[in-house]
Image 1 (cartoon, helix red, strand yellow):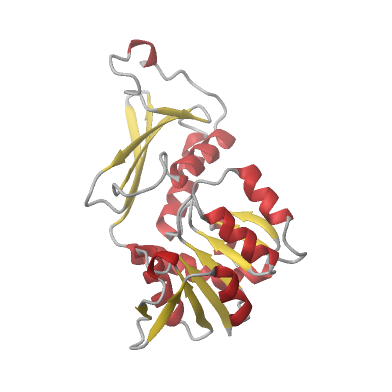
Image 2: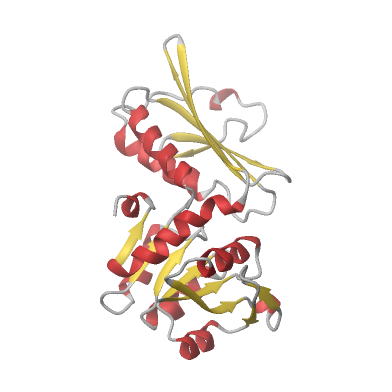
Length: 261
């Protein structure tokens, strides 16, 4: 039985994680942590409730947890990971906003055999979209990314867009010019440049998580789009990561590294 702590448990993603983990026969939510909702009962989706706790350190000490799942906020995720990794708890992280150097340092601080797993997106379709985009960039190097999220998202561009740009940069054979910045009437109209890939971020109520990768070529275009219309779309990926993270160590980034196992 994999013993799981969920941080950010009172949030929209945290609530779904608690229900998804509880539904699995080989997993158990042993603690739900969220300082903003401490003392509140949380429905685990199985007709029972779990009391939300305030302190992660105490939750780890009292639960003998194997895995931490973190969907919190960029301002608190680092401190959560320091506590969990120091205790030798494997971490599955969906909170974006930490740079690679910070993640590497966190992973290095953990006892040997402990894994810090980070995924910019846990939806299987989004992982496939990124894989297809990297493949297409080999043949169609002219590309831009439009990512659309709800208006409460804490970072822009999204972690998925950043990851997609990195994968494109690693595979395309040339970096073609992206004209128009020199003639911008409003600053930022042409979007942000990440790894020489233009990214446009949209934030609106009513959205969940969406991304389109647009390729252009002579007389043709190619569009790759993924839409998460409900947060349950991320749960199969989260469950997969919880199940597989114990077989890895150090820093692992990207759900694609687990999907074939």
